[in-house]
Image (cartoon, rainbow, N blue to C red; front, side, top):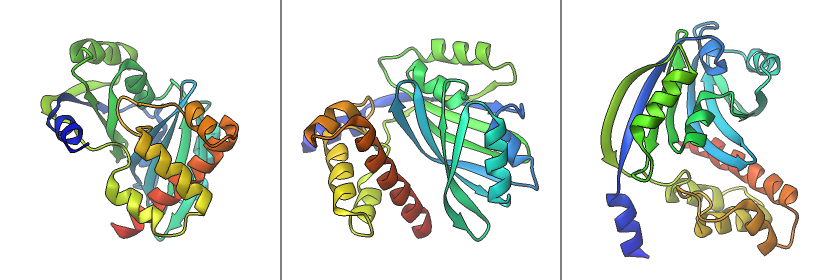
Length: 231
């Protein structure tokens, strides 16, 4: 196990970063309201072409954020936790989202943030994918996008690292939620590329995939909210 972790840590990927300026992207549009700021905290593939994006959004009323999401056909928004200056939101999005576009193209979004109506999105491209092709496809798909950075770097930790996971397991998850997210983590559900599907994990627990997703989604929301409270 240690040698496998070491080899993944030493793996080189290509990091690409783009600027985005169009208010048709909800995370950019929100940042133009009342001086708001948006930052992606986690990006979790859900299967079937949909993804869960967890954003912290500050200096914008949560009701305003949810109203904007309702007006956008590709973003289903939920307030996970309210903070003094904003809140943590989960958005279930489809392939109209630029982060999802990169994910479907073979990259893993790592940085999605915006302020003052200007956005940035960065992603890691594994050695198995052609970074140049992904960049060209992204620029063709989004006319407001500009490539601002492209560099080689070491592979980063999986979506949910050990620190975040232990914080969740030791706090207020239910036994069922704890078992499910711990099993998902150990089985490689959050690795990149993913080593097991939600359907396979649901079969292990002898429950339906929708029930598994419900438990996992609730655990993820709690985990990310607790992580933000600690930062």
